[in-house]
Length: 426
Ligand code: LLP
Image (tube, rainbow, N blue to C red):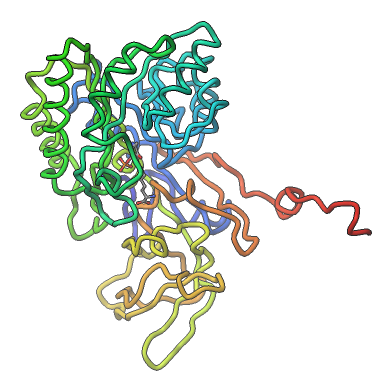
């Protein structure tokens, strides 16, 4: 389900013409739909039983202040993985008591910051981190709420680089060690152990692996309780996938979310725990597009390259994970427009800077606008300035209004980040 549709032959984001935004803000540009973000959050939150259970939006997917503020106003919490993310969430008005802090490499400074702000929960991933957290919190005269992230040895996900739950992956304490570490943590002065967490991967479309992982979490919960330890919370992570082939599937995600919620009831329903969820992609993935202009055509015997003004530094997913993004022309093509096969590439000096290979599109000309669909998650947040390209501006649409929620940076900003030491001379 998303709110990017053709009206009178032109692509719109809710009620705003994409071409108008492109003309006024320039390209490339990320465009997000408030209605899509809100709908996904609300459907998910209802399905998983908020407010009895809790949703912490995984803000690594999209951490724009306007997106966070939109979700925060709907009641969402934030799943964070760095001090920077905690600061961004707080700045957007998400209160500390709705923030969880995950991640394999939290520093003493980051933990101290989280404890000082009084966040809802730290998800502990190693024994040394547990010791560090206890020390840091004790120094502040506090006990920090925490859960232990367990690696259930069930990996899943759309690509090897985004699988996290297999024992070969760096995430979480091993399933075998979890009981011992939990018991140890329960006796530490600076931490209050409240439960367990897991997260096995991203872009998961089959529920079987999630179910297997959750069954292991249920068994571990029963085991710990049998040893007299309290387990009040189960953080079930994120990872539920979305349809990247939107036009074909016309998938609104509702069925998958309902099946996920039913599976959780089935596997964990009898446990009296507060469940936490960390969806990222599911909330914002289909809520964003990257709009780009065709700069050149390079006609070759075997294909035609469409060279567009967006590149892998703006949206790295195709280059990094061989990810598929649909490409919609801004101008809807009638049946009389011939279809042609193109390779859609960016201007960066690497062959990996390719958005699509052998993609069939309506005949496209220089100056046309194209939308890379389903770019709301892990698009802008993974962007860089490689090739000294400026970070792409971001626009949020709500009904007939739009706002630039991150302006394009300037070349002056870019160059001013560096310093030339005096010994080099003038
Ligand atoms: N919780 C934890 C602990 C995570 O590591 C992640 C994602 C999430 C929640 C949210 O997962 P989601 O619901 O979005 O699947 N850059 C990759 C995805 C990396 C996901 C990393 N962890 C991509 O573009 O596909």
